[in-house]
Image (cartoon, rainbow, N blue to C red; front, side, top):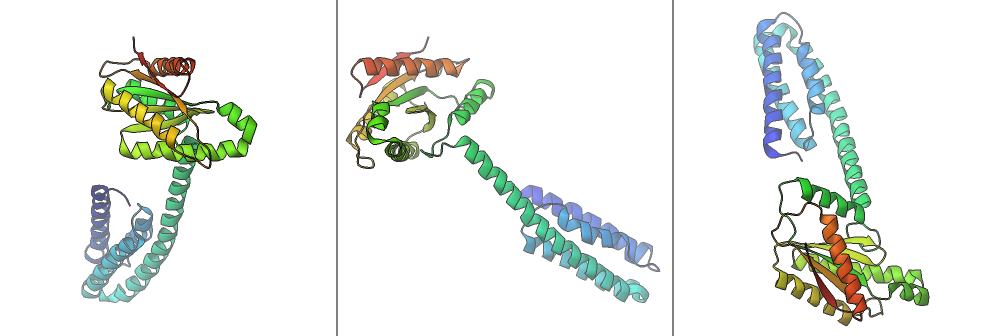
Amino acid sequence: MMKKYTLIGFYAAFSVFFLLAIFLSVIHTPDMRATILLGVFCIMPFGFIDYPHRMNRFVAFWFVVHTILAFYFKPKYALDDTINCLCFAILGCFLGNIMVWVRLESYEARRLLTIEKETDVLTGLSNRRKLFEILANLETANIEKPSGIMMIDIDHFKEFNDNYGHTAGDRYLNSFGKVLNAYTQNFRLHFYRYGGEEFVALAYGFDENKLLSIAENLRIAIQNMEMDGYRKTVSIGVAYCGNQPVQNYEKIIDQADNAVYAAKHSGRNTVCLAFTN
């Protein structure tokens, strides 16, 4: 569940605690009942998250070790220590296992909430909020930058909604999102729903000609594909930035958006290129 070496570190640390507690119980104070060891048995299952069966076996191992040593070094209190340690170990493991599942459910709930906040429900693509989060990271982090940005606009989509209804429009957007997702799997393109019928794609590792070729193939694929009983076309604007440093990627999106308007003015169902300044 956690990273391998982090888990090893936790198990090693608690092994040291168990060794110290066992030393205090059977070597340092053999004429007294175990005290600190009871706390270690109870606290350890709460210390970190791992598979419950591994944590339970870890506790059982140290219980057996202490029991054997107790009967050898302090037989007077060995039975008392065995019963006390067993009770605290069972209690710790029981409550610890419950806490593991509670934590995991909490993590999963937060993960799903994050996905929900970052995902457009209709298309299954990342939403505008996620896009601007990525753009902010691109401007500050030392990570691979996109070589170009595409703006995709579904032609006459408002008229489509007026003629067939918003339910048909939603179904079409769902199918449209699946087409874009297929391109995500085949090319280094990350699609985002920008708003309404507009979509943005961040492209990585393509030169200008290849980027235009991919945009044209996408346009043709959408034109030739019947989605939920309807055929639509798209206008695509491409802004190529290559390897040059970009201070504000929103300006690149604006250039791609202007290229979309140029494509629409050219009759729609076409691809236009806008050069960065």
